[in-house]
Image 1: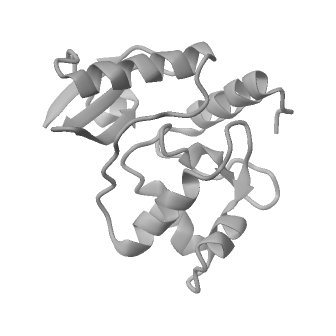
Image 2: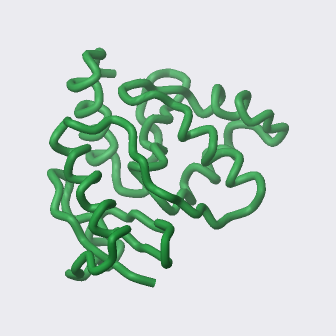
Length: 158
């Protein structure tokens, strides 16, 4: 595994690569982020795209990903990738999209285990009443990401 860090407006993010695929993007000091250099073509490109996203010049990432998890978790994460930049959906809507019989709580748990945050946009899922709900990187980061996307997508703030 290779690692790189990128300074962003929401703090440093840690990118983790495994050969030719990205397997992790984590935010926050609580994740034990240490300094690291992008020493592979994949990590250099991932850092470039993350920086472009935060600069407002990139709305769709184009990186090879490997999402390690259960079949259900991978279905949820695939559905997250279909949420457009600047848009939000509820946990209930996400559960309906993945045809989850277990419902929105199971979807929320899978959402919370997303190993490639921001790129796999778990921050775009909110409560049915429009409130933010949870976020592994903390609610201030989730709010910042949603406001950032709304600003560049021409949308309204929630």
